[in-house]
Image (cartoon, rainbow, N blue to C red):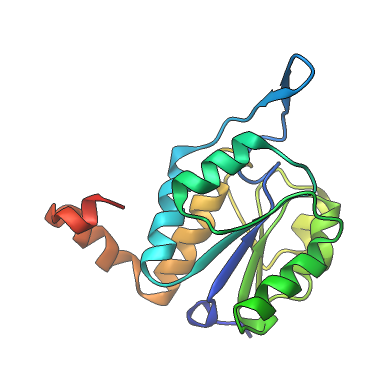
Length: 178
């Protein structure tokens, strides 16, 4: 059985995990995406303990590029044809096997990578097939803190959570820059 302490990479789908599945178009060439700030903090906390966060999506979005840049996410794969292939390539690039990867997704194209990684997770409002395949069935819906819930559970199981919270309570400048 996979252990949280083995995870070195979290790969996340975007639409339906970081967002509530809605895409709002503004004219012909712009779109609006709404992100949950707590998911962003979760990225920074995972990075602080050495876990790489990667985003994979079959779409392309300038808003997502901006959010990834703001959070220091260097592994952003847009217009992905196969999420399994992209996940495998990411792991190889980082010198990892899939047993060191957690994957969170919400819909059918996420099933292939979810079924091959160490820990898979799905938001509460994911497709039924995805929920059935998920190692961790989350209580939060997509766009409503699902990514944060995954990271918090992972860090709690690793024993990292309480120390991170204590760092923030301390008010140390390096903790506040998370």
